[in-house]
Length: 501
Image (tube, rainbow, N blue to C red):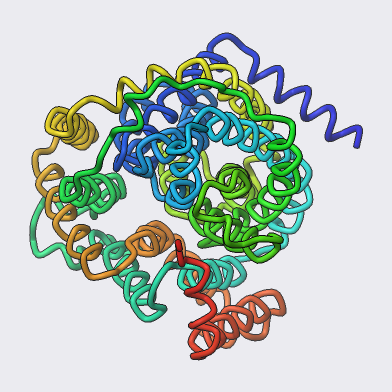
């Protein structure tokens, strides 16, 4: 306990420096803005802003990117409630009851309870990250190449099991991501592979290029197909604070959403989207009158908003302690850490404690900032939502292209991003979820490296993965999960979680 308090004191000392407070403020503001703008999302934004962070100190850069992530979870609730357009994927569930409350003239309490739930969940998740960091780091130090390879296999299987839609399609996406990660030079021999003698592909495809295309450009194309009414934003927002009965009804829902989101955020492949859906479904199951949901039940706003914010923060636990990204946004954070010369994993806590604990402390500060700055800014976000789509999306596309081009000063990267935009659009239209592909793409080189190391240590004996107890246990769990997910009865139950009505 003494060590934990000393580490937290170190973290708050780092986070309260003027520069890091400014980075945290910028991150939460930009994150909220991104959450409010329909169809942009944290993935595309973090990918777009990565080049800007190259010149920043590592701690400040990661604090800002983390603020963008959990800020976008909160910002997505504003547009979901006011105009029935989810700002990003995790806010889809909030539209069901939040927008109904807005139509009933209760947009204020809905927005306020989303802020309160997000703040409470963020505080609890921050404590969890601090408490679980040291024990998980100790466990991670026991891992060798074989264990890391098996853990990554388990992570990819979790991504398949928890992905929305078909298990087979999710498996295909994982394999596509692994194949894309192998383009470029062999990690040991330097021999070119799958580059088709194109010089620009000799070093492989950048993860920013893939993420921006599949999530940024493709999402923009999808959103241009839809036209939605924005009548609610023309009304004046009144009665911002929830009543005492509202708070009494929401308290258990916030607690349950926080707990569920915290657990699902840690699991590889989970993240904010599955947490929000699962929390909403669970809340309907335990409600005395489930028919209220979908008609303006305030618990239907409180629970998923708490869950998605908790999940967005506990997803940092496997990233910082094991070096394994549990979802697509954390995969981008791996890229950001690598750019700044930081190797994600157990060494971060022992060799760079100021970075580890500074990030944790900044999460609590960022959550407090979200509540303080966002409720007064609701009117600003409403005015922003009135900007016509025909003006909004060209600007987003322009910034995306500038971001991609600035990484290597390469027009070829912009063309590749556009190609991945078309691929991402096709995947979305045919119900392929692209997030597992990005996870496979990021984990591919790490898996290959650990596979080769394990085989070298074992002198080419593949049974090393089964004779080492931890590795064998992880592979057995991965196999069991995949078999269970493919059972017809489980598949039917699994898809119920994603039913919105």
